[in-house]
Amino acid sequence: MPRGAACTRDSPNLDDTYVADAPKPALEAMLEGDALAQRWSGVGSNVSKRQIWAPNPASLEAVRAYPNVRGTPAAPPDGKYAGGTL
Image (cartoon, rainbow, N blue to C red; front, side, top):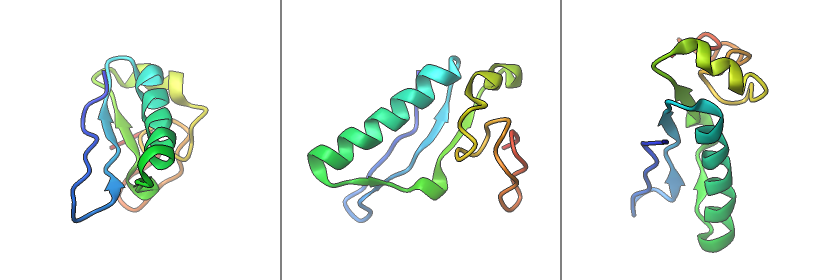
């Protein structure tokens, strides 16, 4: 399951980094959590920090359709991160 979402009182953003044994459900939970947090508390996700990693890199093929999340196979290079590599 997803791990790593954090929000502090000094920062109203969620830090969305997930380690996932099942990447697609984990990423979908992150996106749903972001929408609910915004609706219920006004806390927004720090979109620039969204990333996902899985112990089995081949399992990330399940999230190829989310190129705006670092670590997915279709993600464009972002600084030191190449698409699909964290």
